[in-house]
Image (cartoon, rainbow, N blue to C red; front, side, top):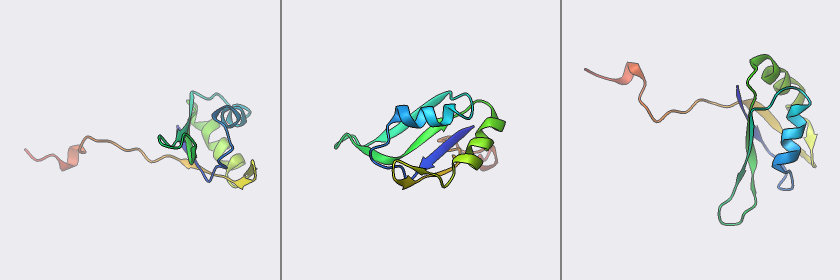
Length: 91
């Protein structure tokens, strides 16, 4: 399950965020979104956890906790696709 973590402090690192989620379960990937111009965090990240049960526990335990001075928000990331859905295709 892919999670989005919002409201991160600009000082939070990808390593510290990954370590936080690893305390709950297996982390497949952790990506802190960085501004290309400034090189600083944009304040949000994505964490992928392969086990849905562990991801749900992470949401419950980590949503609204304080991390590096900011109250973070954790929820399931919305699936985005560049392909039109099958319902939208006309024959």
